[in-house]
Amino acid sequence: MAYVHTTSGQIKRRPVYGRSFEEVREKLDVLKTRSAAGMPAHDRRTTVAQFLGQ
Figure 1 (tube, rainbow, N blue to C red):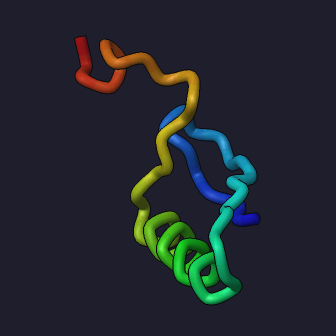
Figure 2 (figure 1 turned 120 degrees about the vertical axis):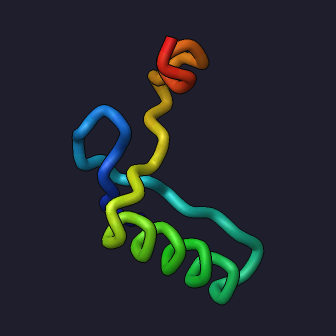
């Protein structure tokens, strides 16, 4: 699990699944790197219209 910033401005846990430990580790690294760089993870409650800014 990783704690990441979301598009709604909150910090939430994001579960990561994979077939092997290495695959999960790679996905976690990507999530953490993006969050540290200021790229928020998409919030599940974001609609397409909100995402497109309409």
